[in-house]
Amino acid sequence: MLYGIVTAITALLLAALLSALLRTPALRLGLVDRRRVRPVPLLGGVAVVASTCLVAAAGGWTGAAPLSDPVGGLLVAGAGVALLGLAADLWRLRTRLLLVGAAVAAAFVVPYDETGLPAGICAVVWIACVAAAFRGLDHADGLAGTVGVVTAFGVGACAAAEVMDDLAVLLSVLAAALTGFLMHNWPPARIAFGACGSLFTGFVLASAAVLTRSGYDSLSSAAVLFALTATAAADALLVLLSRGPALFRRPAPRRGPEHLAHRLRRLGLTPPGATVLLGAGTFSAVLVGVLVHTGWLPWTGGLWVAGVALVAVLALLRVRGARRPGETHHTRIRTGVHGAPVTGSRTGVHRTGLRETPPVRGRTGVREVPPTRGETAVRAPRSTRGQSTAQATGRHPQVAPRPPRQSTSAQVSESLRVRDG
Picture 1 (cartoon, rainbow, N blue to C red):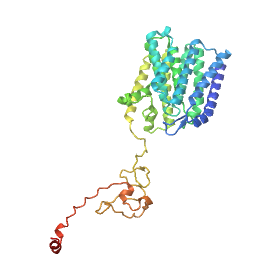
Picture 2: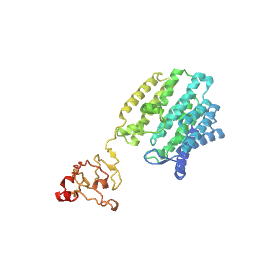
Picture 3: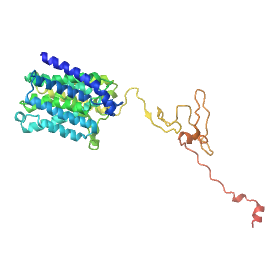
Picture 4: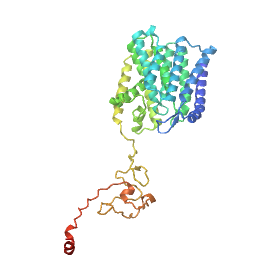
């Protein structure tokens, strides 16, 4: 008990310290996540992986909490997946390669003698998919860390119920490291998770859940495993349904405005509010999974979780393209004078005082009207002086066509006609 508290505090402080120290090197090296509203430095996952592996290895080396062979192999395989995720952060590897790498690592973790070969193959595929789904949860500040902390406590409770003390200690260390990382990743985030930390977290949690359910029947195990990872599964399903036919034209795990937190923000929630709401949903689903695992609920409790998740996904599909309250329409119009975007305008008229005038006949087709009271005149730059208003502003109004020029041959005087023969 005392050792578990010490290791948790050590992992928390170490992750918080490394997250603060790695932020500056990430900015200098240009390792930032540019797909958000503002660039956020990566390498936060490196702090989580390093803290978890160092504290767990120190416990095994000192003999205070020796790791069994399955748990030791799980930690080594997770470190390999973390290195693959770090390579993805550095060189933008394809998602297919990440899935294959996670599946290969999972093949060395699944206990085939207890699950059987068919169920073991299904477990390998499921672990790789959960790792990729956790990478998708990194689309919002603090979301992947919050879901990881809640899931780690739930899987750790299942491991403690199976008297797998070393696995329970490893999961508690992971939860503490994620909590230390959340000190810098809570909205607004100062450092991001990255593929390194998200793949490692999803892989370790999914593999630990498989180890705790080894030896049980497949039906109840599927219910428990889905309940423990319901949030990640719902987010992945929402992205797949949103992309539709475009799924075969661009990779699904690529982050876009189609994830859970994005749609909740479209409904008016703040970034912390969306994270808290999804964390509460994760806690409810994980609690059902723990109760089903310990026998307090039948396995049909997992079906209720699946039903609620499906209803939530279908409901959030309807908010696609909706604007948040107070969001204005932005249209980029070339004015020719300033070259800046015009906000809240559908006519292409700049707010500085120029107003539309009806077309008149003449050489230019447009006449300038002096500004009325309350408006400000805009003086065109030297490069546009001498040009018409349509040429200066870039607008092309409807100009009335000129009447055809009449021939002057019939107006020739009689004397000239006689003189010229």
